[in-house]
Image (cartoon, rainbow, N blue to C red; front, side, top):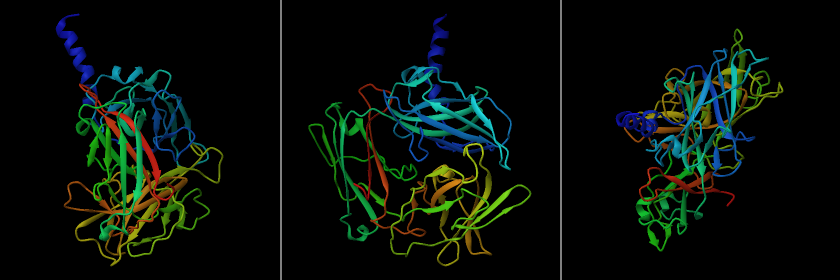
Length: 424
C-alpha cells in the first residue's frame, strides 16, 4: 500500500466523526414515530451508561411505512458541546460501529399499521470504551447518508467527587421564581494542569439540553478544589409542575381529553385547551418532568399492539391574542425535547389560541409550554408567560463534569451527579 493511500485511509477515519455530524435528538425520516432510547427496563430512565459495567440501553421506534426495512445504528463520540470529537472510531469503540437492527415486529390489533423495531445497546459486537457524550444514529441499508433519526446518550466514568446544594437566590427579584445551585468539585484524581480550561461543567434541568448551562467557571480554585458558589452563575427558572395527557386508551377518555373520534380508521384526539398559568399560585402534584412512556389499557404488548392518533394541543394566552414578539412551543420529550419547527405552535386568530397537532402512540405524556423571543438568536426559552415560575417546583437536576487531558482530542465525562430540588 502506497504512502499516499495510507494517508487517505487514516484521514478518512479521523474525519469520519466530523463528516457524519448531525443534530442530536432529531427525526429526519417522515415515516419514523416514537423513537425512544432509555435505561433497560425503565422508559423514564435517561440513557446513561457507566463505563465498564453491564448497564444497557433499549432502543425502540416505529416505521409507519409498514414494510420491513434494513435499519442499522452506529454511535459517534461528541465533545461537551455536542460537536463530533476529532478521533477515530477505534478510540471509543471496541468491535464494529455498524450494527443491524434485527428485532422487529409488525403491528397487530391497531388501526395504524407500522413496523416496530427494537435493539439493546451495547451490542456484544459494539462496546464503548471512552466516557463522554454520544450520539446514536439510526440509518437505512448500511448507508449513513440515509439517516432516520438520532438520539443522545451519556457514558460516565466517575473519577471525581461532586458536592451540590440547592439554594434560594439572594437576588430579591428572583428569590421566589428561580432555583439556585452551588457546587464543589474535587479533581485531585485527574490533577489537571489548567483546571479552568480542562474542566468543563454542564448542568441540566429535567434532562433538557435547550436550556442547559455551559461555560460555568469556578469563583474559587485552590489545590484541585473548585467551588462554584456565586449568586447569579447557576440559576434556572423554577417553572411549574408539568401538565399531563393520559392517552392509554382512545376509547375511554381521561380527564384531560375533550373528545376522541374514529375517522375512517384514523383516531383524532382533542385535548382540553390549556390556559395560562403564569399568575397562578403554586401547588404540588407528582409529574414526570417532560417524560413520556408507551402504555395501553387495552392490549398486552404496548410496543406493537398500541395505536396512533392525531392529538390536537391548544394553549390559550391570557389576553386571547398572539404574543407580539414571541413564539410558543410545546416542550416535552415526545416532541424530541428541543425547540424547532416540529414543536412550534401556530396561532388561530378565530379561536384565540395557539395550536399544534402531533401523531402520538398510546401512552402517558407530560409537557409544558414555553415562549421564545423571535429576535433572540440563542432561542432561550421561558416559562414566564405560559406556566409561571416558582422556587418550590419539583425539578430534577444533573451535573456533568468533563475533562480534556493534555494533548487529548475528546472530552471525558469524569463526573455525574443527580439531585431533586424537593428531595435532596
